[in-house]
Length: 157
Image 1 (cartoon, rainbow, N blue to C red):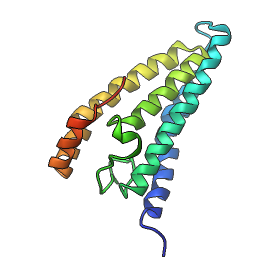
Image 2: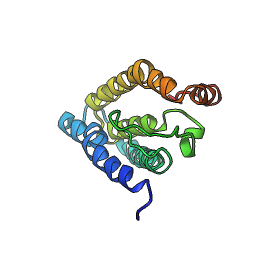
Image 3: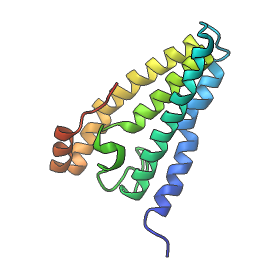
Image 4: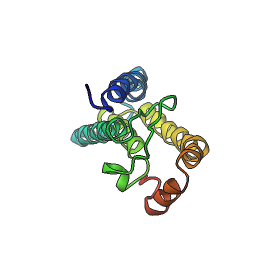
């Protein structure tokens, strides 16, 4: 018998391939070529941002499956409130990771279009969090989510 998080982990992998990878790989690819501005060797600072963003997302996805017994997909959310790992420091570390990847890509590929997309992603994500995600979590987890919100800031960006 497999642990209860194996199914959610498999679904999280599928979701990650479809949604976050589209946002961080497919869309930026179609926005290139870059070369809109020139940073010289500074452009290579984008690589650690990309790696950091990917690591943040993957750690959060793991916590969603393992602790939350769910996925990042709104149609299959965690059953348990995830307040471990990076979620102890910020309520939306997964989104911070995705934005970090996009900003790293903007820097590495020297692309204003990727920067514009990153800014759009920040705005769209903020609106999604404020108008859908937080009300849904308040309704689902009640007082425990309210206490979590008092202890942990929404975002670092």
